[in-house]
Image (cartoon, rainbow, N blue to C red):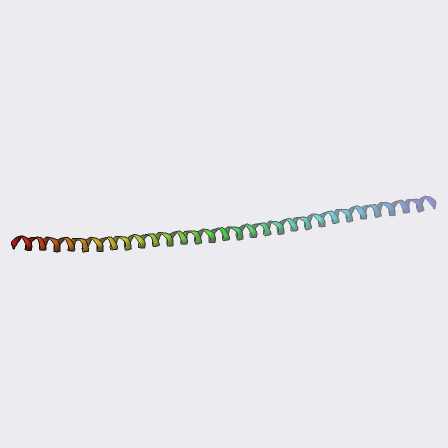
Length: 110
């Protein structure tokens, strides 16, 4: 009887130990799954931040390029205005020279 009782206790202990080990394995799997989910979430977050940073960079480049284009256009306009002004000054100088020549011719004829 005692042997059977002891054998029953030993079987119960073994069964409990097996259940504990199984539970530990399940817990480890759950922890690993949670960690993997956390890693995936972190990767997703990192990817999102990287994407946002790239978008900001692209936007900054676009703004910079736009400003450079505006500067270039302004420089071209300034050059055109300067050229027109110089042409106008040259034309009026040419006209003055022509009038002076005309006066000289008229004076010579006298």
